Amino acid sequence: MTLPPFERFYDEHKEEIYAFLVRRLGRERAEDAFQETFLRALRAYPKLRHGEHLRAWAYTIASRIAIDEHRRPRADADLPELASLDGRPAFAQLEHLADELPPTERAAVVLRYGYDLDYADIGAALGSNATAARQAASAGIRRLRRKERR
Amino acid sequence: MTPVSAELDRRFRDAAATEHLLDVAYDLVDTPVGLLLVAATERGLCRIAYDAEPEQEVERLAHAFGVRVLRSARPIDPARRQLDEYFAGGRPRAAGGLQPPRAARARARALRRGRHLR
Image 1 (tube, rainbow over the protein chains, first blue to last red):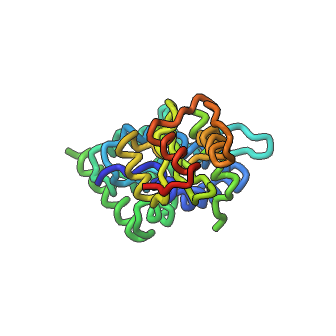
Image 2 (cartoon, rainbow over the protein chains, first blue to last red):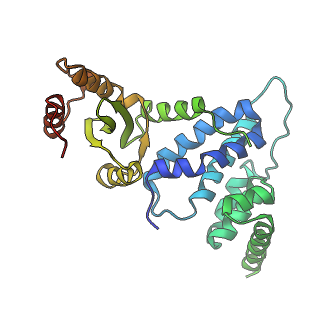
């Protein structure tokens, strides 16, 4: 699938990405995060080699930005730090580990365990539903375990 | 679901152009002869299409100039002002460094004389 013009990508995904960011951050902070998400996507866009999984890609960028937003110190909130074993954020550890999984399983595992998205959001990102997202994530985890045992 | 407001949408489209992230920007410009689709790269005006089908035109622009095509009013503003001057009958100034290509200038001259567009 060839990469569509950015206008089409933006037009197709802006509403759901904004809704996702509003759920994660509240309306006020979602606006800045929305702009940052699509500016970041625009910077990386010419490097994409094909037009597959663009929706999951957009959600991945938005999740990363939502996490950065959560980390920013705020006067009115005391947010817990994300669990991290070796100083690297969870998603950074997972992305490498999940590199060899099939694309859907990889997206489901990284979005679930790296970005802490719930299955309904992951289902939306993958163009399926919560049940399919849960199955893809557990299939991915099983595959990772088998790989680890080898 | 809260929709993306027109203001937020415009802010993103402006920022994309201001940060020089676009291969080509375009906008629809209302003129006395109808809606024109006007496109510009950072080097200047690159296309004026009359009676264009925006979706097809966007594909064409992506093919010719790169995939980062976005509708954005700001980069088209200088051309919009020039077109206003064309249609007001004044002499166009080279505003904002945008110089229409020869074909577009010829087309604008023809329009001023009331000839049909081809």
